[in-house]
Amino acid sequence: VQLQAFGGGLVQAGGSLRLSCAASGRTFSTMAWFRQAPGKEREFVSAISWYGDRTYYGEYVKGRFAISRDNAKNTVYLQMNSLKPEDTAVYYCAADQQVQPTTKRGGYAYWGQGTQVTVSS
Image (cartoon, rainbow, N blue to C red):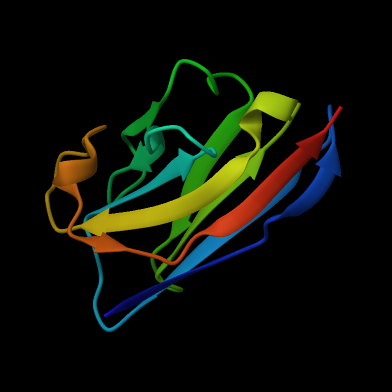
């Protein structure tokens, strides 16, 4: 089982990026994104259920980020708009077989390698 995240990069404040995370080896009921800035704890960003009917966001990204998934491609996406310098972090995708998405790190058994997002002011 492998999760591979793509799409990070350097962008100016106010810009957009789209992250992708492709899973291989199995499918997952719940997929999510977390992020970790230097010197900080890894924090929840967003999660989505299998059918996409349940989505969850951290308060700091609500209204700016949108999570989606394509089950045929076994891929989850994170569209990030109106980026701020405080969004700078390594973004990790996570996945689990639990049906109900959770905001807790411990709720995810599988993790990708992370992709760096840097937002310049």
